[in-house]
Amino acid sequence: MSRSSIFSSSTLRLRGLRPTGAALAVLLLVVVEIGLGRREWIWTAVRNSNMGLLHLLERDVIPSAPPPTVLLLGSSRMRDAVPPRALERALGLPESSVLNLGITSGTPLEALILYRRHRAKLSHAKVLVVSAEDWYANAGIDPSDSDRRFATLRERMTEYPLEESLGLVAGWLWRTYDARFAIARWLKCQSRFCEGSAYVGPDRRVVYAGADPLEGPAQVDVTATVSGFYYRYAWSDRWLKQLERLIAEAREDGLRVIVVQFPFRDAYLAAVRERHGKAYDDYLRAVRSLHGAEVLIYEGASEVGIAQRYFRDYGHMTPLGAELMTGRLAAAIAAAPPARLAS
View 1 (cartoon, rainbow, N blue to C red):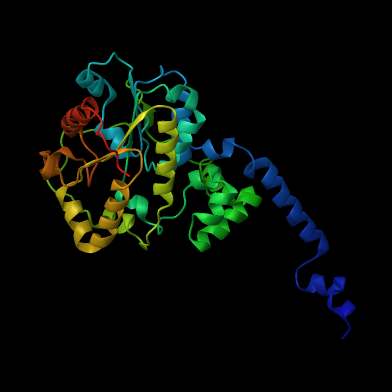
View 2 (view 1 turned 45 degrees about the vertical axis):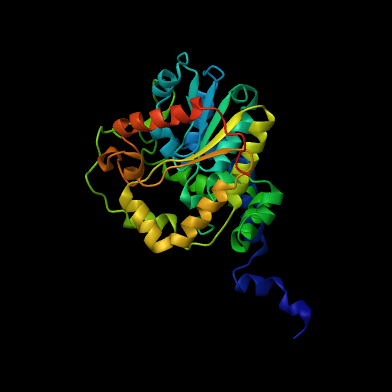
């Protein structure tokens, strides 16, 4: 059989690869790429998502906020642990001096993104407090939409496990692949309500309706949480490198930087130490060695005198727990910085 017969149009039709069909498929991919994959709005179209919440901060919180004296960045545990008005009272600061930009599932990447995109205002702060979480050192946690939307080509090539790196490089070239989950969310929400219950509270925190009981349950099952945070555990310093970049840029702007791990319920900490003790210790060692920041590590709730019922779950504080934690953080901020920072 000749090579020409192998690639004849009749053979292509028999195999379902008609040239016109292939052309239409390519055209559809181009339309989706231009119409959705490369549009900024697709990332933030659904408010009840990681990118939707980030957009809420950027659209409804930061622009209307005065330049802060104390800036708080990090995860939802940061958001819940430090009510801005309470910290202002504890430090003797005027109202609206503290800005808490903690975000659900927030990582150092979101913190770095917010700081860089709003540096002109946020760099007015005297103190930056940023949270650290034990799961920040786990390469087994899949990249989020923040990674897919904001990671540079160099970061995609050098800071992720090989399999994830290949996908992220492909997404850098073909943006529809990067935005596939955002597109899927948007399509799904065309037929059902997806906005969620997040809203901007009076103190400018992005909070959830009904998520702040004064006391939590006496006991919680932490099994699923530990399994999720340590899923396919493998050491990674990607997020810690991003935290180092944030520290360096804030220090360059003249800010004092404090990195804090907020306390957990005792049950969570005990389970982590039992099942993933080395991983947790490696993470603590890395956080304590961050250059240019003061590091505060709070571990079990009982070690810092916070009742177990002052947590909604494994580690998110209720308002009563936040009142106690805010006092401790205020004391750390008010104290003179150590002569020698972590290095």
